[in-house]
Image (cartoon, rainbow, N blue to C red; front, top):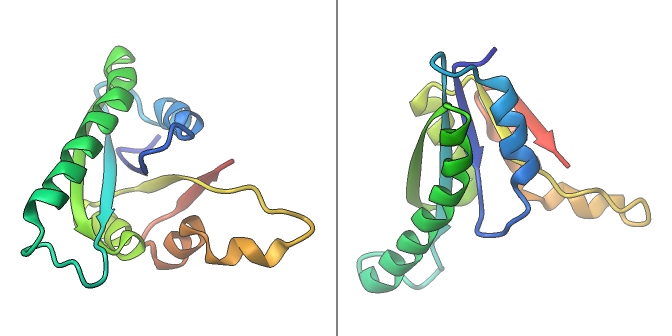
Length: 139
């Protein structure tokens, strides 16, 4: 089993299967799931100059993470939320390294057989290349 599982989430509702898998990989009382949301910084819109804008995005993200966290709490799995600003792929990898994650569980897009190269630019591909630990892609 895993002790620290990092689950990066965006603000969509497609991450149920990733949460379900994290529930099966962490035993109650023996591990932790870290729910991470990275607010992507908009080029030309620095954090310092638009603090109110980024604060609203952070609040929205925390509310979203709490909904997923409730499922973990019901299963008696320890969890915490982390919301940061930056480049998503780099920050996910950095959080995994700094937080000592054993595994990253990440929602991945299905590859279109008619256009398989389109998936190479996905966030899941970028994270899998940068990650300091194993990455489990959930489709």
